[in-house]
Length: 248
Image (cartoon, rainbow, N blue to C red; front, side, top):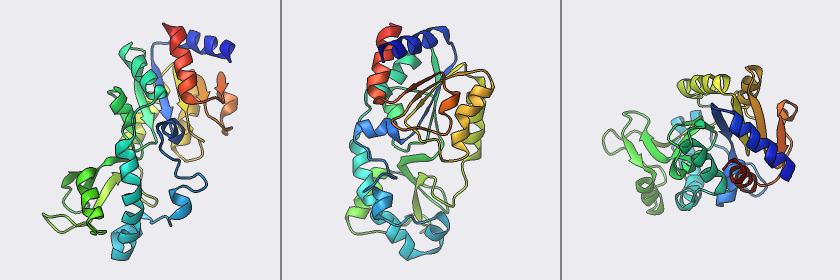
């Protein structure tokens, strides 16, 4: 592993336009469970699609039951060593943009300024009709008070977290910008994603096709491992700390 860390550090030193693409695996080390894992939320709750949420009071209650369990863990989570290493690369002027599939806001909490959230954020919620915005803490208080279908106090519209649900269109502006970043970087860290969810999974390939080097840090294999210059199977915090210790 030490030899791989040295190679990764040399790639960082030689690069001036680094980007990072992150998935659930970077946040599990902050104590946030992967939704997809055995015993995770999607294993215990039925997935309520966006059309269902919009159309059905009963579906919204089902959806918010799951969110009521999820929100406290996100609010309590703190950035881990991998998040802080990426933030340090940003302060060095090396890393320009983080592209994330995560909804927890931990990259911003660690200090990264330019974060593209492909799946939105769970830290706020909005009225689907008039767009009024709330901190998610306020909605959690309503849920804990027994209101499992919270409505807007301005127009009585349904309130939904500012995340992208199944059946909801991906945010086109964010997707376009993510591909622009991938195609413009010279080194991409891919951390903690199975690279199975399209079209986001195509971002590392887009970077490679435009000449960028790829460093993959993921516990399991991905369909794009063959494109990577270096592949680590160790924990992302351990790897990123090791790299930064050699970058200086």
